[in-house]
Length: 169
Image 1 (cartoon, one colour):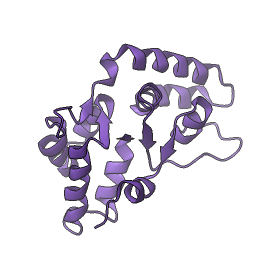
Image 2 (image 1 turned 120 degrees about the horizontal axis):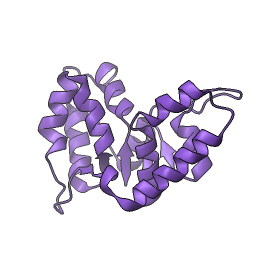
Image 3 (image 1 turned 120 degrees about the vertical axis):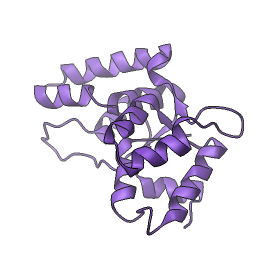
Image 4 (image 1 turned 180 degrees about the vertical axis):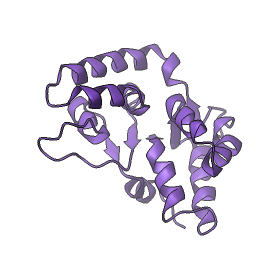
């Protein structure tokens, strides 16, 4: 299973897969949700809802209230899952103890969906889909790929996920 980061939706919408240019991308992505191969977490759904734009509208109509062919919701309620919460706490402690990251970067990371995404990936043995790249040496910013690597969670970018699940547009 793949769980998508907020930035994968935003990047797709704002660049190569704009609704008016490549509507087939959005239809095909919705098909991946229907098979259960792709999901999002509640924290990502909340971030998308905060955008109050055409992505918010598409997401609300197609993802937020829908379920896959087996009746499982497209949105994982990560914040209500005890196992996810335990991983969340463990990973948050790891980040807070890491002197490489500055305090502002730690606080920002902990306030976003990113940590919930990684904790859910760990709990469900799922692959995180993000457009973030591994930070360079000496960075003081906390990035999803770096934390995924530290805690043993698989991650890919949107294009690698598309190749693996067979999204062709």
